Image (cartoon, rainbow, N blue to C red; front, top):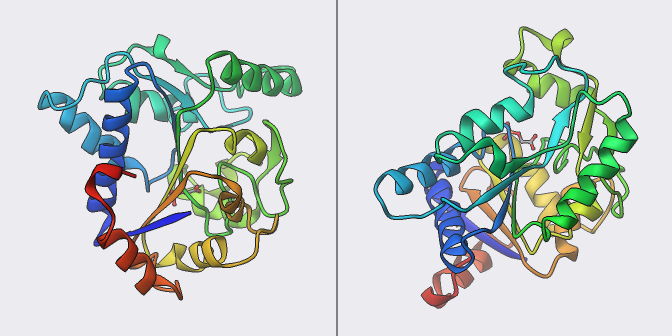
Amino acid sequence: MEVVIVPDAAAGGELVATAMADLLGRKPDALLGVATGSTPLPVYRALAARVRAGEADVSRARICQLDEYVGLPAGHPESYRSVVLREVVEPLGLSPDSFMGPDGGAEDVPAACAAYDRALAEAGGVDLQLLGIGTDGHIGFNEPCSSLASRTRIKTLTEQTRQDNARFFDGIDDVPHHVITQGIGTILEARHLVLLATGEAKAEAVALAVEGPVAAVVPASALQLHPHATVVVDEAAASRLKLAGYFRATYAAKPSWQGL
Ligand code: PGA
C-alpha cells in the first residue's frame, strides 16, 4: 500500500485527477469507478478542468457507481445515480450511456445486485476505483463487520453513517436505511484502488485502515490485501499515522515516471 500525504483537499483532487487522466491516456476506454460524498468532488472538478483546457481526453471513458440507496424515487437528486450524473458524467461531457450503476429501485434487490456484479465483469472489470472512507471505516457502504469476501448486495446503514449523510437530505429521517453496495470482494477486483480522505474527522479511520490489522470491523483495512492500493490523505486525515514520516520520505523519493 502506498500512502501519499498532500497539503490539502485541492492537492489530493489534482493528484487523483492526474492518475485518472494518465490511465485514460494509456487506455482511453478505461472503466473508472467513482465514489460519492463530499471528498471526491475536488477530483471530478480537477478532471473536468483539464478536459475544458484540452489537457485530458476522457471522451471514451466509462464510469461506474460504487453504491446506491435503496428505495429513493427514480430521479431523486440525492440518489447516487443522480449525483454521479451531475458531478461526474455531465461535467466530463460524457453521455449517460457511458455510465453504469446498480438499480436501487429494483423490485428484486438480490437479482439487481447479482446483475451489477455480472455487468462489471462483462465490462472487463474496473480499472481504477476511487473510494472515500466513512468515519466508521466503511468503503462503499460496506459497514463494519462486512465480509471481506462480500459481493454486491444489500446492506443496512449504521446510525453513524445515516447521521453523516443527513446533510444531503432534509434530516436524518429522510436518509434511507438500506443501500446496495459493491462488496469488499467486488471492490478488491478493481485493478487499482485509490482511497481519498480529507479532514480530521477521518484521521482515526485512516490510521486503523492503514496501520491496524486487516479486520472486517474496519472494512477499509481490506486495502492491505490489494496489490495496487493508494491512499491519498491531506495533513488533517494523516494526523494519526505513526508512519507519516516514512510515507512522506518514500513519496518524496519516488521516481516521477512511476505515477500513482
Ligand atoms: P464523505 O463520505 O466523502 O462525504 O465524507 C465518504 C464515505 O462515506 O465513504
